[in-house]
Image 1 (cartoon, rainbow, N blue to C red):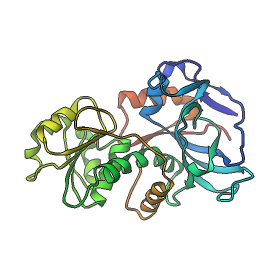
Image 2 (tube, helix red, strand yellow; image 1 turned 45 degrees about the horizontal axis):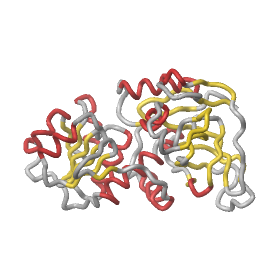
Image 3 (tube, rainbow, N blue to C red; image 1 turned 180 degrees about the horizontal axis):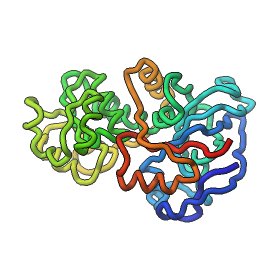
Length: 305
């Protein structure tokens, strides 16, 4: 089968596209034919060697943590799914080896859930990692409610756009920082848009104190926001430090099921900024790093039949 892999740490230049061994089917796994995967900042960080000291790496590494696809084969112990089912998955493992930038992927059955019926393959692939991260941040960690005024830094990004929508669904008043060209999009999510450079002057944008800050951007904006809202609860996916709860995605089938229900109900949407052929994964990573695309996720779609 075809896929993308790297045999040493580095930037997008280490990515290769070529033949890979077929994934192995175990008793409690499922072989999924990838219809779409997404590019995540975590892919790029791990590819550069971040986390090497805490995660075992077997080269060659196939990057990628989430996908949407069709079940092709099921293990002998699998009763939840059957060939032909349309599924999504968050496939992160402690060993960096078998990712989703490939034609077929072996996925533990407990990491699968049904694909939302009303969205494209690319949109569905953009839900697992970003959705689980946003949910952990907004609902589990900050416990946002209608009593809150929430500031989302990076509100037009993959995680940020979902965090914004979840905070709105929780009843909060939401401010979303983003570049000016993305303000219409942020407003469509139910938030009041603002420039990242304005976070030091929150009083210009809300008559009430900001009670919670969700940092999905990094790049130094969080310190300014914390200074402007010193009593706010703070959660970040991009920074750490005193007074900051740092959150990473963690698989939870129950939460993934809730997210799928919200998508199917039209209450939550995943935006795809751009799609690239699998063979162009290096270019897709460069576009993500350069932040030259529109709001939302960057997807990889198969360039094979």
